[in-house]
Length: 395
Ligand code: HEM
Image (cartoon, rainbow, N blue to C red; front, side, top):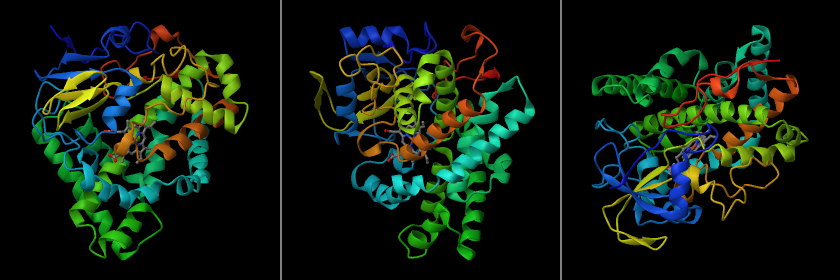
């Protein structure tokens, strides 16, 4: 009988379920049973995960037969029709449009803005006084304000678009709620695009309006879809990396001391935290469109695959002593942002946000610590994006 996927019971909240590590040692390409009733191949080795994610014989298109679904009920996949679920040239067409807008240089130019956002959140946290919840005061607001600033979406409208995004991504909405949220978000963004058409600024949506939509290279519907996808992407992932990363550093004072030695040390620490706490805990789903041999196993066309990033990032063949947090190890070749053509578009922005948050947080509140032992912290064991639900701290 196949092992059931996903496993969510962890023995240590900082480590992926132990059974996966056993699998990687004994059967790194193994059959698993999914809640949808399908079976799929689970990949747990760094080399196999990278091979699949960079291989055109594996498709990201959820509408293909055999695509592995991780939910029991067949709701319309939220990312359907967005370029994250496209393949080949169709996907590359959109990536070419956007890659330059997320380049290291452009993201670096956002540093003063990101620093200001972080300082504002820390001011509010200081004014609130201890105990404060890092998730609420810092982890959620920073990525949300940053992506709004980048796209040119007024953060004051958060009550409107945040509600729609929650409905789309929380996994418990029914088809009707889902359709209403998608329509509401589209109407909101369509109106915003009309404003940018009349009075463009230097934000990303305005740039897309001027460079792509007005010359007819992008339709209105495509622009709306790209806008909501970018607005949604990176909210939860970055937020939970902030929460988990901060907790990991507070629990490992020697690593915190090393990380806060300077900008280069912090950049290394961010890589190690991304590796060790791979928040996309359910992995990347793909379906084979042609027969392919991966890690010595023949995967046939039409079979689903799950590339488990969290286990690839603990592969001892690539990261010696992988369960230990070592901010000096140089972990850049981790796969926390995926790999291949779909590798995270916002990785430079996420890296910048994490480095600024950890630097400013521990500089401003040097004695900061959780108010409760780790055993009493609520972790998001069942969520697509792993993390801490709340992180009460004092200083
Ligand atoms: C794709 C992780 C932050 C935008 C991805 C993928 C991963 C990932 C694993 C690959 C999906 C796949 O292969 O199917 C993360 C993590 C983040 C983060 C761990 C934070 C720590 C961000 C931010 C943005 C962003 C801040 C900003 C807009 C995107 C987009 C894609 C993507 C647009 C789709 C790329 C494509 O399909 O070509 N991300 N992400 N992400 N991410 Fe991120």
